[in-house]
Length: 118
Image (cartoon, rainbow, N blue to C red; front, side, top):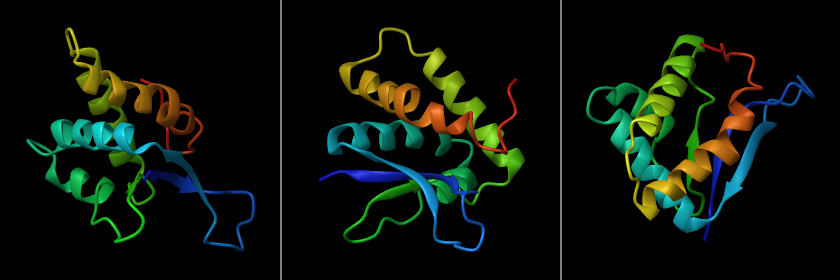
């Protein structure tokens, strides 16, 4: 089983509020990314953790950056990037989470209208 990461609402059709920019992630990679989010946010940023990694549905697991305002969105991006950059000799599990961030999430993140490069 896999899961979905929601990044933002699509600007393609403003009349249809149900259109979201999202992507599917393999189950093992999904779990590793969830552990990364826990490590980044739980110790010092529980509010961001709660917004991004809210309760999962019974049949659909998801992480969502949609509800973050511009400041929270950019803070989250910076925290994740900094955490990954500080990982010396990452485990295979951590490498899987890095793949999700670098190859799946990051391309969507930098296209988001809330995104501000450092």
